[in-house]
Image (cartoon, rainbow, N blue to C red; front, side, top):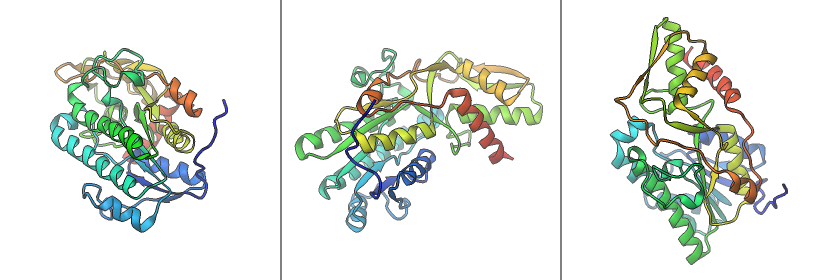
Length: 316
């Protein structure tokens, strides 16, 4: 389908927060491919926890647009251990940045949300209109609610001040460059690392958290980067937009797939004393296609193969 480009990226100065993160590095690469000039200060140079830092940076650099992806994130373990800091950091960074963009009349702003904002028992597939129909899954609710509050800020600022802000909601991401430490990483890099290390040691089995019955949807990080750039260039509405594949897989089936791709011959042992998290996650991705012509392209097995090869190189 044909969608009008309303904010051409070529030649634009785009400030990317979280540019050195997993997704951020891919977004920077995609923006540069499209001819944008990327501004990517470190958190030391522009600490978004400081209420005035974002405004000082905008005044000095005058970006044409801002893509806000900086976040304090982690897996179930990290969310359970640090709920207060996860809420405060994500709320404060977004709050300060959006206000600074309003005060300095930044031409366009994109804020990245999270699938963790959806209700725990949301009907599947998750539709954007269901975001407010219940409380998020408890283990990551503080993070999810903080990010969802930024949607309200964007929408209310658009209504009162005319701020040109959009809000995209990606599903679980994976791919080269992801976190590999078992304390803070997400399910796919955790599975890959566990299977690679178990194979190298000749271990008889691998223990996995939960029952394996929960289902998840996964989006390859390069597809997500393309979606963010497409949204920045073409999307102008106040409605949130899901980013995903529309395909879910149970954690057990995902583990079996990773096991096969890695070549681990041992057993899988699920430990049900650990929580499964939200029971099911699958997004309705039709709005992204309708509003700015984006669909995912990389299938799960293809993306997993690339991610496994990348992690082999990292782990040595």
